[in-house]
Picture: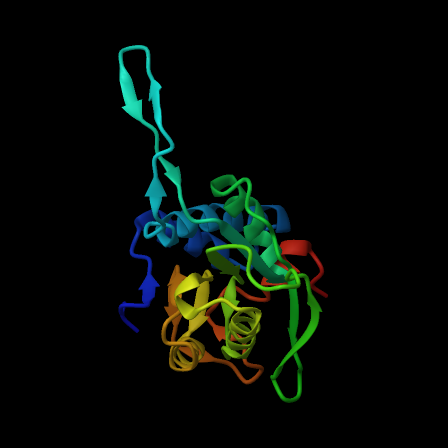
Length: 216
């Protein structure tokens, strides 16, 4: 799957190297958290290139004056519980004042449908210009689609939503592109297949279990 106007698969060598390390099943949870944070910073950098800037006046260096630059857009972060929490620290390094709106959505085992169980979006509609949805894995695409549905119902347009993941399946990403064509998606890689349990092959394993050391 190649890049399109709304699908952005990183070709950066550092991203590729970090992803290769993350895929290794023998990494400790500490290392998985560190690599996930590193990838969140790298993908966040790429995903924020289109944010608008403005100047709020003039300041000085030791040798002269300059026009200040600040990010104009008000940014919100939407981590999808629980693996999306692994992206939060990295994105808060980029946007330290961003509000964090947690969404709890799980994939029902039999139907594979996304079930919402927690929603911390403020009442009254959006209070930000751009939301970064943080969820390291897009497998079937159902959770990603449900998350964006919730954000649109809240009042955001597709153009205000950026979906950030480490890896997605070709099937899941294609479904996400079809259901929400205006949403920009940023990934480290797209893997071709899902196994019989709808996990990505080769993927990065169960991201939540690996991050929080809860694997059986």
